[in-house]
Image (cartoon, rainbow, N blue to C red; front, side, top):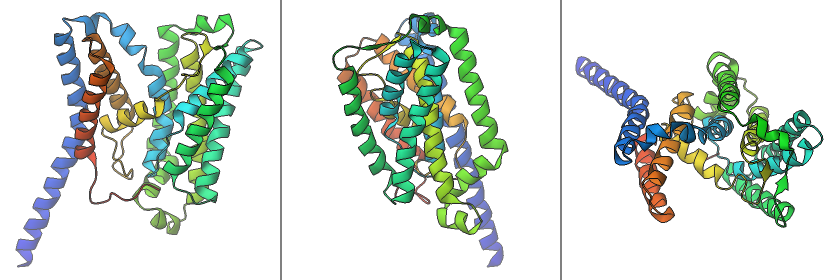
Length: 320
């Protein structure tokens, strides 16, 4: 009897290992398949316009890292688009005096909004998705007020930074710092522990409240920096700056295999693979000449499929 149970347990463990491996590999396979498919459907235009395709991924890659940290803890953040918009306006306005100062102020603007999110979520005990939806609408309204008459123009020198080499180097540096911190320091261990079980993390000596608060501040600061990469393309900020960024990030992370509930199964490559997959998918649909409604329909179907595949039903819980 005990032997039978042991064999059954061993088979179950092997099955879980296979499922875990498939979940890790599927996003990468999906990225390759989608890229080849759209390259065929667009008669090679995907490769021909690769520089243009990649130019859209830098902002998503950087901003997604902050949300990745939040989702690892089991939370959500819908305010990223508004953070991007506010930081873009601040950067443009201050850049006329000093571009480095503009970057710093953009980061501080994002951190300030992240502080508001962290305060109401951690101190006031309000669910993360409720808090961030409120700040999303609050600051989106402020953005429309500040930029409703005309775009907020920045320094003409901002456009000098809009080069592939500069954006690629900056993005790689940011991701490398995040990768090292997440995989080789207590920072990543604490995030996964909170996502796996906040009460257990508290008993393990982790100051969960302080950690969650700091992550929201950090996420806002990261998006504030991403706003700099966003504004150098056009040198100005409009009422649409950062619009729908939170949706793009959420879809990108899920496409990259990010477990909705966070926890120990989170992998840093979810950011890179997911962002690339989302941009390739969106660019491919655009190159095919599909209208917005059809594109949204297809993206929605793909998103639902990946959610169904990567939702960890055993540990899934209400978002913190």
